[in-house]
Picture 1 (cartoon, helix red, strand yellow):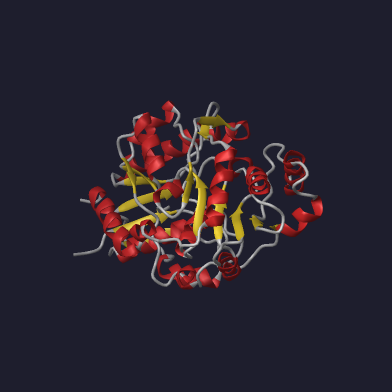
Picture 2: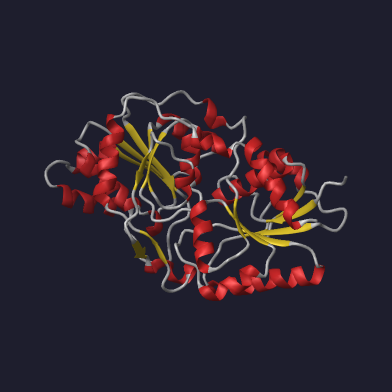
Length: 376
């Protein structure tokens, strides 16, 4: 029996991009499930695909030799103002034209889905998302064809072989773009409130693309504002020794080294579709402190600290991207402070029980069933 041929159009070719890494993981998971996957990027190519990416997925980069059996388009799930309705309309047209299954793989950080997008999503064969929070948001909005499939990892993942973190933990760390949704300014504030000088350190690795959609504090301004709130406990020189901001672009091997250096991964985000750095931290055997903001809720364990969400918050900086009136989860910074302090006192090593459900051998059957449900 011929394996189903799936054309998967997505960003996959950038070594540093989380979306690309997730797309490659899903493509490799489908391949493990016996599906003939062909990758195609909708991004304008600016040079050859890096050799490391070719080595990973090069056999899936060749064009289809016959008509595809199913088409998956993957990109951000934006609000109507960013042309999302137009994108979905094109996918519906493709489905009607070829009379073949067309699916949409996406993820999003907001808690609501605009009602005008729901009938368009329902005209597709499937909408696949990588976290249960996204699934719940879609189903609440009335989407009937949504499916949650976990992001897979593989036995040769370099994070799995890292040595255990220090005990007691000392180095807290975060990796991500410096932007309002991820709220790294709240992370710095919580860290200074949680600890005394000389008792812990915070490493913040920020992405290379600056936030330009709206005014937002710089790391230095975030430190100054936090210092003004904590009183005489911290002084500027103390913070300079305790808080490290890494702006340089790091190779993937260096990011693995950053996980090896850290003891506790911490996120103050208001919304995540997966949170790939937190997921990597779990694979690395690090304890995770995170807000209940979406993606991480599916892979944290009883040894981690999940800061409870308390209502929702509007983040106007994202109105143009998410749609006016969009919301993300809110939380109390004091709860984050408490979680940091509790994590600092932990002596038992963290566990990886929940993340085990993401192993490709367990995820591949779900991907096979998903494709099989569309290709009859």
